[in-house]
Image (cartoon, rainbow, N blue to C red):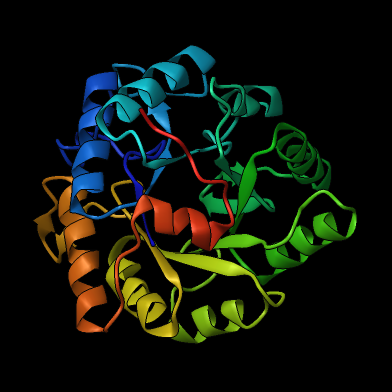
Length: 273
């Protein structure tokens, strides 16, 4: 199962001109990833000048544009937004019509570098989990270190998360992006859980290859990495998905379609016109 994180909240066109901002650009990048083999689109949205936003209307416009081009893709709106946003702002992405089937849930506070602190108190984590449970949205549990797995399991013990759980290991921010640490994280999950792994920047392809070899799933895209290889900017999210597909085939793993990904994630089958 390949997830494409197509734009994030922080990367800019100055870093890579292909980073999408507008509704049309975001839909184009989602389609390029989908055509290359991504079954999940991890969605942040921007205003046309690149400013990150959690505005419900902007999310709705981008989601509708993507689904017009890729009717069966799994959309995964971010509830992370950007550093400094309120919980109420961040939760707007769960209020779309139709309701999202999948969304991210960050499971702890994270140091992004310098003075940038991405705050997720226990109360925030529990509230987001409760909102998603009540709206019928499956959370992807975003964990940046082992302690965040334990916070997720605290929410599960409170009845706020339903099995089977799905995690995304984001390595290279607060925890090192090594195969050793990936193995440790995967070994810390409760039985029956599924997981995706993300390596930031130069670690993207090492972590992708290790995750594929270990039987996990992979996230790639401009949010996490702008380069196809050292010194070579990716021209699209689709190029990065294509590279993940090549790695999977070399390692004997088949690529999941959206329907197969829904079965992996225990999501309901989705009817498309």
